[in-house]
Length: 128
Image 1 (spheres, one colour):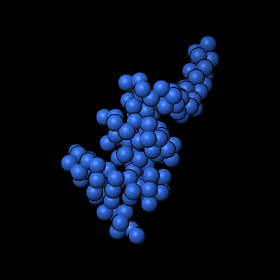
Image 2: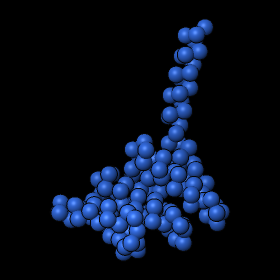
Image 3: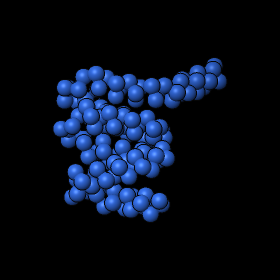
Image 4: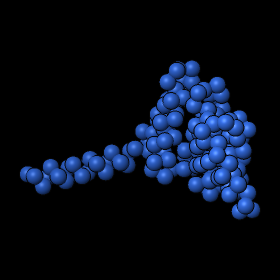
């Protein structure tokens, strides 16, 4: 009996892990479908963080780029731009990463992440 419960628990854990990307995408889709809700930018932010945690950098980049368009006045905008840069870099798109780091530095030169963004941009420029 204990073995059966253990097997069921393991199977359920695998199902939960396998459906995690679907749920994070659904969270963002819901927020994009209702952009006027106050919690929508934060929901997209959580989706991006979740996708990055499971190494779905291309998906996270696309979500961040879409969020930049949908929520231009959001308090989450620095997060969206900075993470679009990080995800572009980790997904292997160095040109997009350089663009987003540059855009972040233009818009938020005094932000707490500016020094990190500048270092990453300098590294990308030195690679060329």
